[in-house]
Length: 340
Image (tube, rainbow, N blue to C red; front, top):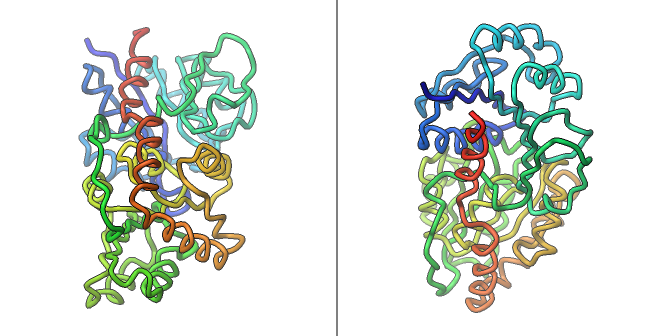
């Protein structure tokens, strides 16, 4: 009988899709090596994403931003389903929540914030700054650094790209784009004469509020391509010459593809990663769009102009692919199932 991993994660217009997406990458690898996976969510919002990949989704009917309130229902589910291995990915966990779960199952927590000592059996922090994070000593196992970045299988072993003129720029804004980055950045880049010969490929997430307006606005513009919730992101990353992206999981995907670019932040949990990427010479940080949108736009233009130098792009690309090899989800899956 195969071991079943249960994954507790949510997706919606507020938290975006990143938590569920990275968990799906891990789930795919668990399934690949012979395990089963079941997702547990607060509400129905994440269910289509999960079932589309062939996984069962159990809905608790709870609040995604108040996890302690679901403990009774979740603990009953754990007993009912005989859950032994649990991966939790939410910024709304509390120490009490994780401790209660760890009393009845082996819990692995996907961490980005190091908010408090996590009373779990395993912590994963795959961020650029992961190895520098100070966690308390004890029996908890820590999987730290970019070798554990949970990417989809297509992001592994990508060959070196060619480096010609800067002609195609990829823009990603996360699952929601609550601050209208896509609209403002497209307006700025289409107005800059230095980018007159560039095509702009703008990827909008599942919960992007202005996707219909942008599709209409740029319908007749041959230089601008609005792409909504696309399944083949890797192909665009390999086809483009540079990228502008939010500091989430996409950061690691473009590293695996060796795609140079500019990173910005739109959430507190992205700060450390964006700064670390800049410090490592991987991706320059253009700032936080919540605090200074105009400054972000100006710095993005400056950094993209630097990337017109093909030799410079080649050097950065090599550093990126050395940092992220795309096999992190495999390593996590093997760890999660090795004890069972």
